[in-house]
Length: 328
Image (cartoon, rainbow, N blue to C red; front, side, top):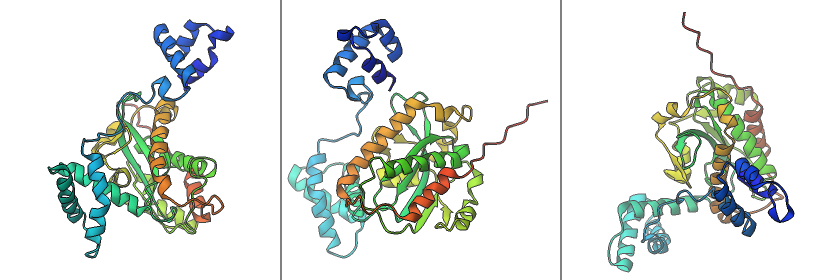
């Protein structure tokens, strides 16, 4: 955003601004700023300010397209025998792909394609029935800190990320509040405003992170007549279910890294504007791959229960971790 503001404000052809000042405002050396300004004038986009050029979104093998062409057939053939067993689909896909390619792709490639297809098939429903609140340590190229903690609200059936925010795992309630606020924005005026929603929210589950204050959150939810929030599972379990080990450039880290990904003062995560913007980009790209599979109906609107649950988190008072006493 800093680079875009600087480049948009510097218009040499109109005598607007000084190149040295524009370069300083963008955080660039002067020669680099000239190159970027040229790219910006040709095509004003995130790519032209080099936000999205540091690393590939995913590792794609030479076999991906060939394997992808057979994964639907493998699913249909296995399901014809009654039920879906992932290992059986992988085995059948290996046979089909080998006949086409002349060799068997790696197990990792086969399994990844099968899980992607499974997630795609599970999206054949309206979102808003079952929510998962999750937090997970992650790393990504160009972060201002080596690791961050992401808080996300995931629709379990469709794998849409309704809302996401950076936060501190010791203040998970606060992180979920920010993510809920983001979800309300995305549903109301953002990229999810035209989705066809389920008529009723039935269940919510929440990973507490390092915030013991959330262990009794179900009591507050029940008093607000919301589906009881059930604290459940290790950090990252629901994000991994929705996206695998990475979501775009975000690489999810193990649960024991959560404590290492916190730190700084209480306001630090909220002030990390650049990293927060990077997180939002990855969420939008993740959702953009899912939305074409979903039914659209802007008139349907999210259920009252879904909005009430998000507002419950967004407006809920969030405690701060207690201060440690100074040593004597």
